[in-house]
Length: 275
Image 1 (spheres, rainbow, N blue to C red):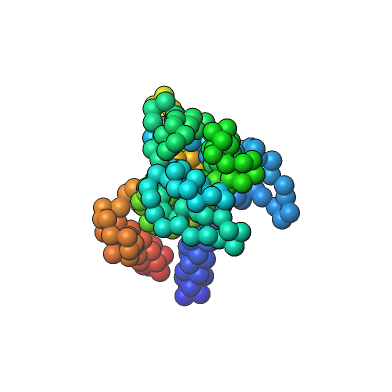
Image 2 (tube, rainbow, N blue to C red; image 1 turned 135 degrees about the vertical axis):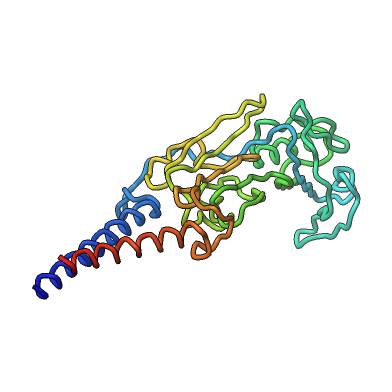
């Protein structure tokens, strides 16, 4: 009789262990990224686009040439200037140019330069050409560098560090953006990552990404653009928690579930041993 009871208890414990193991495997599948990828696999993706300037953007435009006076005339704000190794005078202090509603920036001695719809490199070439066309410098003697000043994206929901972050690269991917926010928390749904994007006309488009599959690499939202909002949905555990404490072991729901399971197991063991 005792042997039979012990056998029942072992069977019960084995069953509970298998249940916990299967539950753990299911949880792992919900946490891993790019689960259908294989080593050295090639994933076809969209053409690597570059961020294009839009009205409301701010650009830092640095113009240098072989004549200090010309460099001064093309500066938005007078600042320190020094000759470089090629004897070229460079403006080292500048203010950002605001792209107006027409898509133009107003540059000293050049007037309105249309930049909306252009990449940073295209803006640089356009400004350099305008300087040459204005006969302020000879072809090949003008160097223009364009940087973003206020381009940002926001990340919220189940990320480690929610907030607003600067875009400094023309090709910032969704994975790189999430890493800047500290990655998803353990409770962030990898299959429910939303990207909210606003176009020039003010229309908003939502893109749903599933980071567990390589398919998200073909989404228009794979590359982050200025003013994008990234939202990560919580899983059922997080959504059902009754506390805002990030430590699961301090949450009411965790201890309620733990005690409930303990009582159930104790009851089952006592019942089996009495038979």
